[in-house]
Image 1 (cartoon, one colour):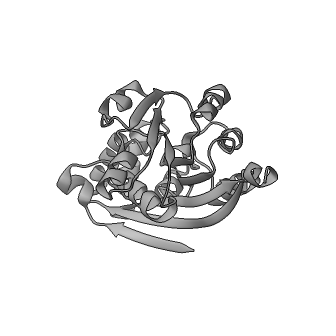
Image 2 (cartoon, rainbow, N blue to C red):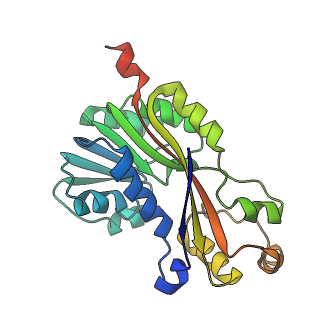
Length: 241
């Protein structure tokens, strides 16, 4: 299933650079997370958008283990007696193994797992944690036209690749492709957004001269985003049944 949602020129008019990430967290919590999530793990929690969505919708949960590699991000996460902040790398199997003792029920991740160095290894380790999972993962259709104009490939995996990896370790209850479009007043605003939002992964891929040429030639007044939304149960749950 493919759907497109558009947001017109919000980035510049409101000075916000995480519009898409907020929408992604909202949809993950509302449409893909189980209604009785129990004890939660939020991987790549950032500034705490998953927690805000849970609280804003008054969704009860037992405890939230909020994990991020960045100590700076963890400092921005809301404090709450139900939240335990953990600095850790979801690409580290040893770190994920240490979480198994926390008796987590549901594993969540919004807008983070696309940066896993080895998504297969990470998905396998995550399948040993909890009984349910819900992920939102950016895929290679993100910035599709931008990459085409620049003559560069996407640094993240395709929708089909991510789907195949998840199918190895999970029984899929629901999986969906979602596209967003975020509009801008002019091309320079687009590149300011890319630089400040964090959606590019922070990897410099073009020279300053190449960026200038791209600003002049980019044919759209919006950026494209493509995500895979998923909910499912680890296959090991069935093997033990």
